[in-house]
Image (cartoon, rainbow, N blue to C red):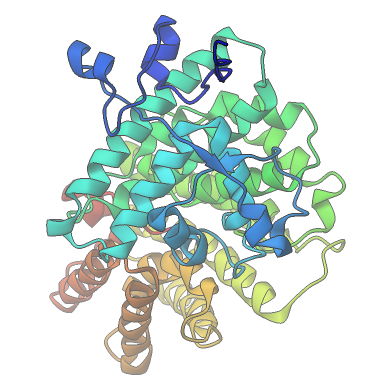
Length: 443
């Protein structure tokens, strides 16, 4: 009697390149045979497991159904530790911890992106140990392009692909500066490339936590890199995203990135763009200055959100950052704007510095003090020794917590401006950054 053949199960984990060509993939690791022969970038083949059985405390999250992407040591490090660099909450409530695992089944770009940052994080972003992380990042970018192509040509799983494409792009954007020890790569192409995509997601009126996280992270990133974009260029409008954040249920939630400051971020973006336009045109526009200044002073945290004192203090620090950039912009053309205004600027800088004293060591809120240090810190006169020391210490705390060595370059920038000011050379942090071709992470 002939033995019955074991039924074959069709594998769905072949690499993207073979799937695109509709040929069988042998799923060899790390490069399949066909990609090796074609000299293609093989973005890998992933098996699956059921992590929810081991971690029931996150199994009730609303995420794509199991099986999720197979965990490995690198991903576990992301879920347990590296994800703290991207949100103010600890695991498991951190939205980029284990609750994200199920999404990886749908996106190799997202998986490679997380692995790249996690690898670098494990090695403290040391320049001589980034080779593997950068190689994995290359796979992430290759996969991301494939997924963007799918997004444009297929309607299948459109909403899932929208979300994973946006998140991959945003994490690649944020980590660009982390993986560039010289501080020259801000990864602007990643955030500018998804402006239309995120507007499309916002227009669909989503209510899920994943979309909520994406919208806040996008607004934050856009706010604190707006000054890096030359006048005339733009990411596109944030109106749709802002409207989405002001609708239920998002309007009553504390955001994992922006806290209670989501609606403040577009105003900071305007202040940053004004700063850049003043430097590019070498002229000021008092009507624009006064308009942005008035709206910054008028802004208040949403009353629908349960307020926490530390988050209110951080939002007040961000408001001051927007105002400080306005005054810094005008000062570059006026060579000093009068004693009264100078004193007002110093008062705002000191108020923003007070936020730094409220954040304990090892707390994820440390992630979000970069703008306070880089934008406000340079304005401290030498007579404010205690505040200058606070800036230096907080830069060091931030570097220890995030492991990101680029923040050391930020401290070097602030110290350089202090030295120039001591020599009587009045120059802004943004002028120095642009002159030296730097795009330091202030995120």
